[in-house]
Image 1 (cartoon, rainbow, N blue to C red):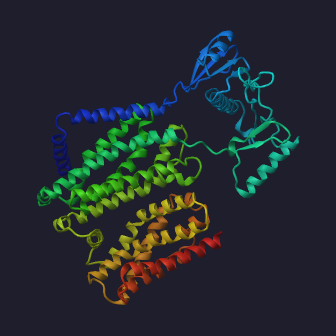
Image 2: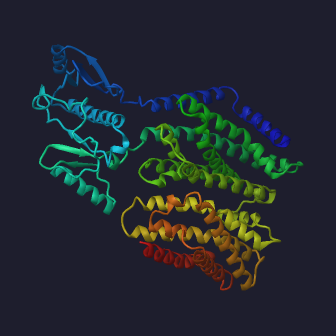
Image 3: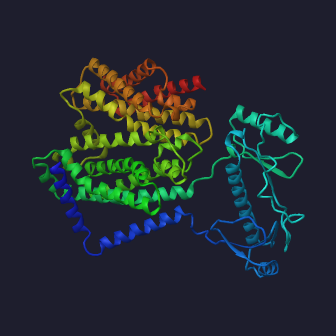
Amino acid sequence: MKQILTIAWREVTRLRGRFSGTSPWAMVILLGALGLSALAFRQASVLGSGLYRVGVSGDVPSIRDNRFAVLAVDPARGKLLLDQRALDVFVDGAQVTARRDNKSLYTVGALKRYLEKQELARIYATYEITRAFPLRVEVNYLDTPSPNAPLAPGGTLPDLTAPPSGAPDASPNAPPTSASDAALQEQLKQVEETGALPEIRLDPGTDKEIMIPSLTTPPAPFAQVIVAFLYILPVTFISIFFTSSFMDEKINRRLTILMSAPITPLQIILGKMLPYALFALAATACIALVTRADLSLALAIFAPTTLFIFAIYLMVPLLYRTFKDTTFISMLATTLTTAYLIFPAMFTGINDLAYMSPLTLAVKMYRNESFGLQEYLFPAAPMFLIFGLSLYAGTRMLNEEFLMGYRPLTRKLADAIFLLMDRAHPYASVALLSLLVVPLVYIAQLVILAITTNLPGQAMLGGALAASALVEEIAKSMGIAVLVERGSVRSPRQVTALAFLSALGFLVGEKALLLASVSMVSQTALSAALFNTGLVFVPLAAHFVFTSVVVVLNARFRVRYPIAVIGGVILHAVYNLIVAGGLG
């Protein structure tokens, strides 16, 4: 531990030298701006604050939304201000008056939606949840307003104090009492049969609309996702500084001198990473405090995300020698990581696959919604495992010959895979490698599944199955292909045995990881095909056959590795398609 702290302090000293002068103040200003932005989004006081000007008089429902600038005036002055365009809408008791222009009509629409939301909240707080099968709400919409005239005949707004006519009564299981109730029951029957989620139905024969909150698609959590993304920004910046520092010492050969000291590669990596990781967690804590979030929960959510990002940025300087290549790959990694974290969170509450991103947990935290251990482990477990894999890979790749070699990316990856394995024990190494890469394959398959479920067309099914098969076959066969290329394995019997051990290691890792998430990824035939959630022996035999095809073609018949992989992918995709078709 002493060696790790010594290297960490040396890294802090180097970092302080790089950010001498005004740079620390620039960083403080940047973090302060991020914190204030997060606070602004947390309180939802963004650009729409005071956008609509509403005059009120008499007994008017309370309007507590910062989009509305509310002014209490007497009726005569309110109408005068409305004519002078100083107000957009004037509400006098239950009577609403508006102009015919777009701004006034937009204000009426926004006010209507706000009052609907408040009424639903009142009903939720008034009636027991067990009495709703499901809750049915009738909404009375006002007529289109005429210039400087009441919006509806009789000038009435919906009564926001009395229970709506569709509120649940003491006998929720009573049979339908009207044509509209019969229509509602028919709608619910269709929902059960088809899985469709209609939000609003027009009550036959009337001008009322019936809302069913339990079937309403939740709104996109844009503001909460923006706040969650503000946690990612400082982590990304800090990880880039970590990569830059690592790259600088690598190019100037100071890292080579450090490796000659009586310390282990793991101590070097942890020592250099420790201060940056602490800075990232400190930034997370500051944003949580500024946005009044639960500090311990925020740290628990973003700790695996931070480690995941650092795992990616550890690999970048290990694989490349020049700052030009490192910058390109860093930007690519930033783009892909941001997309992986942000896009699923936008579907919070709509699809359980949104939990593949830890930002979904942050969205629920800011919505004051609870989540369980399974929802936490779904994104966190693969990230912790990938971080562990990166540390192991880093310790094996941290040698001068590999670091200073300048070769194409494919060759560098092949060299890295060869370093990960123990050439004295190739059988155990291949099985262990297949097991260790399962978290990477798992995340890739989740991304494939998430994209596919949001795209129409049967062609997407074949594309998803082929992409998943490609990822799996490369993961299972790459270690064997490298050993064959280096001459460590020669006979077909050895290759076949290695294919079986690779399939076994991959299946063990796959099943172990699915224990934390099987209920979330096994909801469709496609997901069952991708993740092989059926019997143990059938997937094992399938993995063995497909991997054998790839490695035998490559080793025995001298087929180029990419072509051999395509052969295995075709068989694997056909198998996945059969599984998906049988389950569908």
